[in-house]
Image (cartoon, rainbow, N blue to C red; front, top):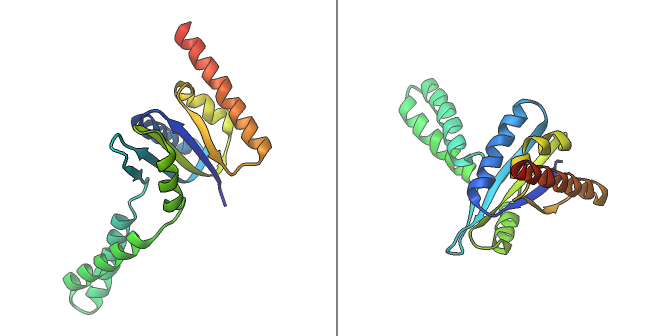
Length: 173
């Protein structure tokens, strides 16, 4: 099971940008993510979850493929594709892999209006190198929650604070 890390940002756009950068960093093998979701508490008080993977679409695509294959076997590929896509979409929309949606919605309610959080389920990482790459976002980032040990969480807070000071020094320098 991965480690849960929730980082708050003043704007949803910055949380989204950090998520995109983490995908690039993941290609360099500095982090392995199981899930990455932006939780936004908009100005009207609504909570929105921006999932990294659209499970309904993925299920429909996979179901459509298998439905077409089964349809070909029974000489009716269009019917097979339609039924397969429907079943795949339904199963995809009912799946909740990664971080629990209920937890993220509750967390979203605690965020100030207009702000966001980036919820990460991290399988493995090199925290100092990842934070070094994301230094530009450090002045706005705040560690909100984690399931790390107290020691690891303290080290992460220290890394974030050091990155925040370095980013501010570069901005003023």
